[in-house]
Image 1 (cartoon, helix red, strand yellow):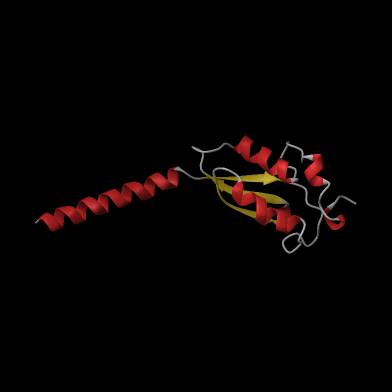
Image 2 (cartoon, rainbow, N blue to C red):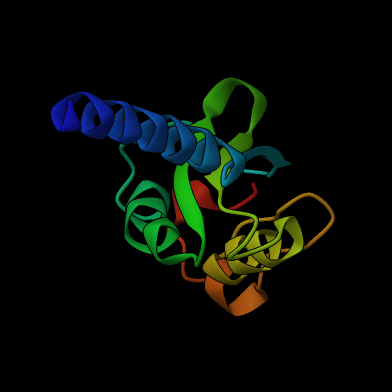
Length: 116
């Protein structure tokens, strides 16, 4: 009898935890300008994305969408906000919607990544 109740309790708790985790995630599309035609494999801009993006506080995952020049970011709204994510992306050297890229960070990109 005890095992039956324990199983039901664990089942209920796992359901509560999984639904709580879904509430801790939001997805946001952020428009940017990337001028490199091989961004995903480029050591300058692609490497910078891979190196810097995981350190943005509250960011769960990200993807760069070449065709539309957008970052798709999934984040925990309890740890960060869309504005803080935009500012962090701008500090890396990318435009993020209306937030312009940090000029010093942008200047460190290779020639193929800079606006022609």
